[in-house]
Length: 162
Image (cartoon, helix red, strand yellow):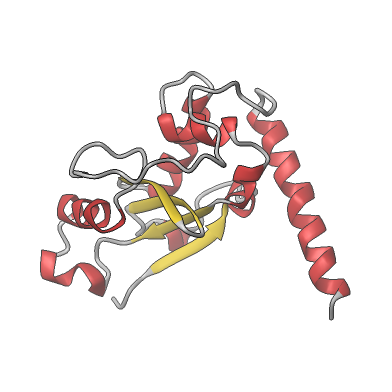
C-alpha cells in the first residue's frame, strides 16, 4: 500500500464536511506545527476522531482539542496528518495499529502524549498551554466559517501571484 498518508492544514480540514470515502482507511493521526508534533493518536476513523478532539476541547475533555482552541487563530495553520497503519512504513510492525501508534509516539515524542513517550517534547513558549483561556468562538460552526474565510483568502493570494 505504499506510505498512504494525507497532510493538510487544520483550516482546510475544518471545511471538509464529511469524511471522504478515500479517507476511511486512515486510522492514525498527528497534530503538528512545522517543527513540532503536539499529539499522535489512533482511531478506526481518524477523521471522526480529529473532529471529536476539537469539539471535546470546548469541554476540556481533550487536551489537544483545548490546545487548538486556546491557540486560535494560529492553530488554523497547524497540520493534520492522517496515516494508515496498512502503509509500508508499518510493515515491519505487521501493520498492527497499536504498534504503529506507539512507533509514531516514540519517533516524534509529541508534547501531549504520555503513554509510550519517555521524553515528551516541551511545549514551546510561543504557544498558549491547554489551560489558557479559549481564544475563539465557542461555536464549531463559527470556527468552520473562519476557516472557510481563511482558505478563500489563501486561495485568492495564491491566484493573484500567478
